[in-house]
Structure formats: structure tokens, C-alpha cells
Image 1: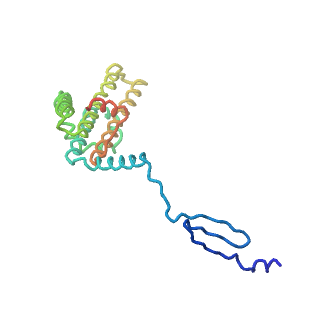
Image 2: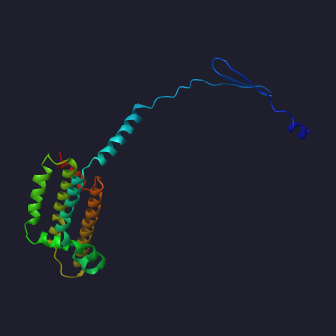
Image 3: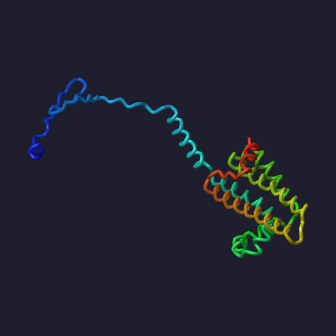
Amino acid sequence: MAISHLLSPLPSLTFFQTKNLTLTLTGRSSSSLPLNSNPHFPKPSPARERAASTLVLRSKGDDSVDASDRLISAVCYFYPFFDGIQYGKFIITQYQPFQILIQPLFPAIKAFKSFPFNGFLIFITFYFVVVRNQNFSRYVRFNTMQAIVLDVLLIFPDLLERSFNPRDGFGLDVVMSLDSTVFLFLLVSLIYGFSACLFGLVPRLPIVADAADRQVL
């Protein structure tokens, strides 16, 4: 009985075409499914259109950075690193990989440190000739200002080191840790800022980027 039930013929399918195409199933059970021959798809919302256009504009803005602007912005990040290279005296002397990494920069660092006012002169040049000069793009002025702010922040570890100048013991360990942390932050900022600018991206350093934004009009 069960086998004959399974082998029984399937319900017949009958199609009727009307103004709105209707599919009728006849057999043991029947149902009608209205199918619209001219489906109406909703238009994308204005918010989605604006979001899509924003993404396009951002991608075009990144691609429009000139090669000269990228190079100038990338070179600016050497300024705070050269000015704070003394904070790496403990790491560089103890770990050879850092010596190998810094060795190609020794001639430039020596030239930078050859005159005690080089740092101040570069600061004045960067700020008044580049940052305040509307002839440069905002991309160049922002990265230059970010390098300046990073260099200005070196005043705080310098003041701490001059105020507390321990010769040995726990105080010396604290100074070594502080100097090494500052040096590593400068090194990471140099690598990050330099590489990002070469690719036309906008590097944003923590704390530093917000201060640079306020200074660049």
C-alpha cells in the first residue's frame, strides 16, 4: 500500500497567464502565487550613494599626492630622529642589530650634530617656510608639522634626564628605560612616517597628529 502510494502520479501543474502572471498548482493541494512580470527594485538610499561617493573621493585623494610631496614629507621624519638619537645610546651600544640599522645614517647624524644650532635652524625653517607657506600642499604641511611636534615633545625627557642624573643604582635603570623607550618611539615613528609618505598615505602618530592638525590651516 505504501509502495503504491509512492508510485502514484505526481500532481499536475497547470499554468494560467493573466494580467499579473499567476501560477496555479492543482492536485491534492492548490495555491496561487502572484508573480509580477515587471518587478520594481527600490532605488539605493541617498545615504548609500553618499557613502559610495565618499569612498571614491578618498581613493582619488590618496592617488593624487605628487611624488615630490611624498618625498619631502618622508624626509621630514628624519629631523626628530636625528635630534633625539642620543636617547639610543644604551640600546645601540648593547644590541648589534640596532648598530647595523643606524650605521648608514651615521654621516647624516654627524652632520646634523656638527653645529649645536642645527636643530633650532631646521625647526624655524620647517615652521615658517613650509608649514606657514600655503604654496605647499596640506599633505606636506601636515607631515612637516607632525615632525616638528614630535621633536618638541623631546623637551620632556630631556628635562627629566637633566633634573635627575643618577650615576648608578635604581635611578640609572629608570633613566636607561626612559631613554630606550623614547628612542624606540622615535625609530618606529621614523619607519612608519617615512614608509607611509612614500606610498602617499597619511601617517597619524598618537598624540602628535591632533596637535599637528590644529596648527595646519
